[in-house]
Image (cartoon, rainbow, N blue to C red; front, side):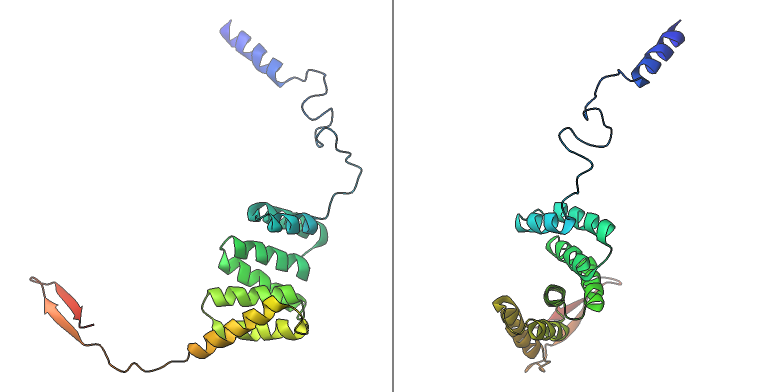
Length: 185
């Protein structure tokens, strides 16, 4: 008797009620949305979300754009920029390198790749990408000019200079088989 009751309740829960349901009668479109209309470009949505500092949502919009348009330089650059803002430097670097290969004069990809490389301490290579971005932009964007100035300064500061005084180290025994390295700084 209990098994029959449980089976009846289970089957009743799986059946439809014949109404419009939560989604207004269509299983794939929310109420008020005409599925025949063209959707807004994922890149535009992603750019707006980036401006609103909603980087996770922007990344999803850019992935939708990639599904619709393919991996163009613009889409790759947008994906790289979203990953950069999320702190995912490895993903950002690879995506931006791919965008720069796709279009060697795409200014946003070149500039953002330079930013990633600066974050990773690769000042010389960052400088090269900022120079390419500056040239492709004809020097019109102040932000790229400032990035290039910083990269030049950092790359020139990164030149190895031998320290004036070498620190002295002393090895001290601290027990039967334990040693400690001490520094005189």
